Amino acid sequence: MINSVMKVNYKRFARIQLSLLITSSALLLHCGQAFANTNLEQDVVTLTSAQFAGRKTATQGAQLAAEFISKRFISLGYTVDGQTFAYQSGLFGKAFGRNVVATKSSHCEKCEKIIFTAHYDHLGQKGSRLYPGANDNASGVAALLYLASYFAEKPKQYQLVFVATDAEENGLHGSEYLVSTLNKDEIKLNINLDMLVVNPRKPRIYAFLDNQSLAQYQTDIKTLSDKQITFMATSSSARLNRLFDLNVDWRRASDHYSFAKVGIPYIYFGTGHDKHHHQSTDTTAHIDFTLFESAMKKIAEFVEKLPS
Image (cartoon, rainbow, N blue to C red; front, top):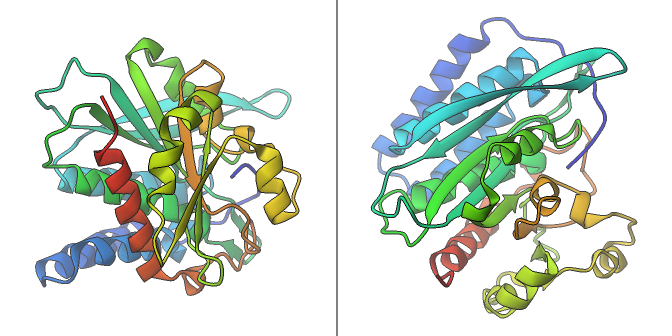
């Protein structure tokens, strides 16, 4: 979710360490461990490691994160394109970001598109303090890769496009650029994934939708609930704020707002408030990966059953 800019320090030999991390991920798969859970956990662990230095936009850490995400998509059989964009930084400055866009050819080339988004940037470092961003938003990127894996070989009634966006924390710049390249008449839906670490004490996933999407998908989202996790669908910021005692405009809170502004329907999946949000304590230590995987299976099931 959006936050202000902070300074970053880099670590030497980061590229070598990145290569070792990717190799170790491949070895885990080769050894036959549980595919979905292994990758969800391994992807979050990798993205929050010191090599990525908190993934602040326009830093070496963010560049390494983009390369890692690209290689993960390629390993799943996707074609990957990098979208480099510029945006204003300060009164007179300019900064650059990079989206990672993954697509796969299918029989459904003329079908409507579903655009999945998850921002990979975070706050970086301040002095010696690292902001790993495990929930915000390594979890969303891991979820994005999970869904890309889940649908990689399945027949689809839509074109699925998976985008890891940059510069969300600085003002949704990556998603704004992405949307500027799209023909909105070709888009059925944006599914935005941001902060998906399920709280074991109150295991809920919130789906925040525009009014049109709420009417269409509310029942299907609610039926995802089971004994482990409750799914709640709403288009009311006031309702969510009452639950969390916050004052947040949830429509503007993440990359789905870039789609909302041009009239593209959206669903924002997340877990709402997190006491570790934008703190150095947002680490993997607070993630129940079993619940995380259960939530992702449900979201994949929802996508699979979307009506044409």
